[in-house]
Length: 614
Image (cartoon, rainbow, N blue to C red; front, top):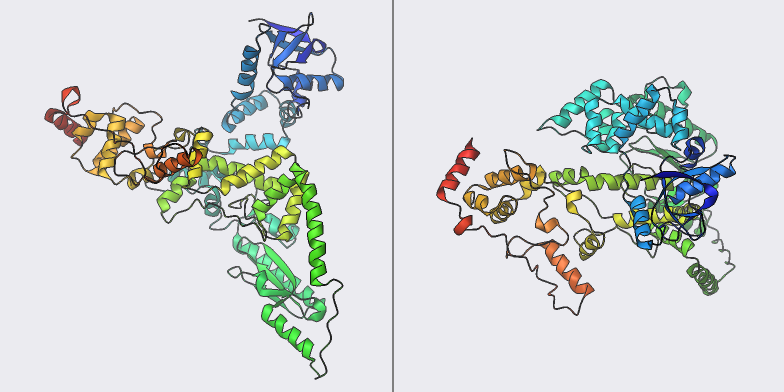
């Protein structure tokens, strides 16, 4: 394979390139590196109809970045190229797809190792940021992984802990890291993760510096900071509340001096329900409610009376306190009928224009899915049950970790608190809906689509026919997301099913030999095969039949919800096919071979029993 340097004026983008299109791609992320170092990775090209000219089959972004570098003053721009045969569009398209699709970014720990080597070789943070088109803060965040104990870094590399947990461990002292690591590696202990870890580090509460009302320059307490978050945290919660409460009292006194009739402070364990109050201006006796929250946040509700007080005040004004005649209400400019006439005509005009503006409609629809309205009601699928073991299994799963990263990114883009449990239901009514629509209209459409994808994923109903359809459509492989954990074995209580699973992972002879054992023994043998323990051959990428896409059953008894949903989904999409949508229609159980070559003899059972006892 030869690599030739070809001048950029002799190159063009091939129509076989999967990224070919009229719109130039965004190259802002790689442009600084191309200007400084040039293109390092070769571009795949093939000869075209012009003599001495070539068309790019893969690496279009490097080509456009080089054009931009040339426009910025870089001279004699040539690209390293590997030339393939001409006139084979299928081959060119395959190469383009491989180049663009079969890529994997290095994990953060590998990035830390590489950046650390560059620093030791004399590169500054500024140099690294410029070379790799990153901000200095992004580079510092990667280098901050050096503050962690090596065992924690290796657990992060192996995806045993998630990014949110690592971020909070950067707030911990070495002693706290060692204490957490002892819990993490203990067989009978539970190591807190994510937001639970933050609470563990701060003694039950973590309060951000950003919500302090008082002047931080005069605060003498300790602040814990790290590179992963803009604001630090108060090390001593009691010190924070002492300063915050003093400032709240000052604000209360200031409100009273301004002429407000009353100022009431609402404790953190109480809630200010706006529907129980009426907006009332200061001149009509409205008061101020100061709501404090457990996370330290303070919200000021100016100009309110309780609904009962507001009703009494209106009756008093209508009758007149001095016994005079009631004040006649001003006649509105529009009657209710004329108001309906105006509203419906304006609605029709806006609706007509909106139907022709898909991007605006998309932003409005996403905002409705997040905030809801009088016509929209959206519910979030809770990832929660009354079983703590199931909750922990879901919370620490790879799928939930990856989704949480996407959700946090979307929350930050929309200006919401990244610690919120969901994007959907992040607000309600026009006070939230209108600002959110304005924010979405500022974002590029691909970003709006990413927001939509997260909201749709949050509101996707669990245990539904749609899950079965999407699992097949998206090609979901449960083995990529799930491994048998202790919660699974604890919940597997049917001996017939457990024996069938053992036959599946270990073979009929082993299942027969253990058929009369207790369920605990059968499950331990299953675990040996799944993990490759106790000299058992490891069964790779094993997933129970009911969890796979499409699901099947182990017995003829039925009662497998995933199978029933899959059958109904198939019937709904192909109603003419003779498929019964109601029964689970389970696949026959894995049979344990008896007799012939597969017969499990008494000697086999005795040997197996002795091996288990050992």
